[in-house]
Length: 352
Image 1 (tube, rainbow, N blue to C red):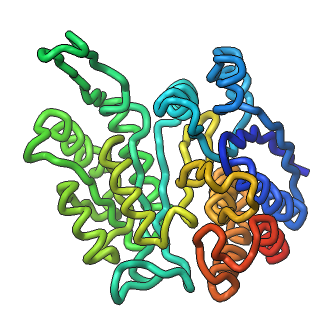
Image 2: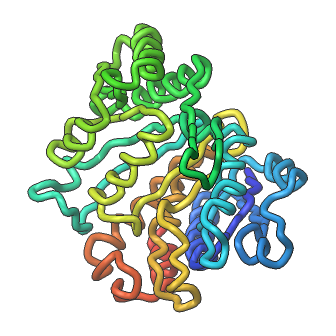
């Protein structure tokens, strides 16, 4: 029997509650489909930082590299200055584990409301592939004369041919494997960001010559945002840089029903990948057993898909679809008609 070692980072706020239900469903899927999941939990997050001053040590990063996958809850603590945990844990793991792909399905399930008029599951089903280790988030820049009237802040977008090309290749391969519209849209800003997106555009069409079966499309990021609202059905797979990807995936989360159903993956195809719900730690709901765990369960489905357990991944997604289509009243915390643990039990019981 195959056995997979999974690192679990419950994190802050409601993260541990969401992770608990995600693990519950993953265990049900493993039992049903005949493989093992060995979970090891690590207490990295705000509470530990406040107690010890440690965010994440070099030894701990190296320890996490031993796992094929990390299952994350949420990072963000109200008593910790914004940026400390996010940079020290999330961004550090993305960079040091070389998780160069951020994968975000934008898929509306039956029974889930979307703010888009006259759009349903048939129209909202695409994926965003975001470059995850370069761009404006690479941390290049600095501040001169801080706190004075002459202060200067510089933040540089770093784009390498290697980084851009490996992201594009992943996107082309993913589009081919997805085998739906077989259309890849590059989202950029070639009319203004003429250096960075000249590189992106040239690489896109050069690499694209190796994929004659994939339709190539381009859209400025502002136009892509409009089309995601007006005509989401025109998209299959979108590929873009780190900053634009961060922005358009939040728009994607809303049109698929909200953060309560949105999950994502930070992928290193040759190393350790990390799977997480998109929403934050929601500290005001901590310990109340009312947070919606479905995004965490969806992240679990993506984790199984990444491990190659495709039947189990499909079963978990099917369970979520069943829950959404008539089982719950709302995706909002406290309005679901179930507690957090009851909803996890319901989803786990639907694995078949």
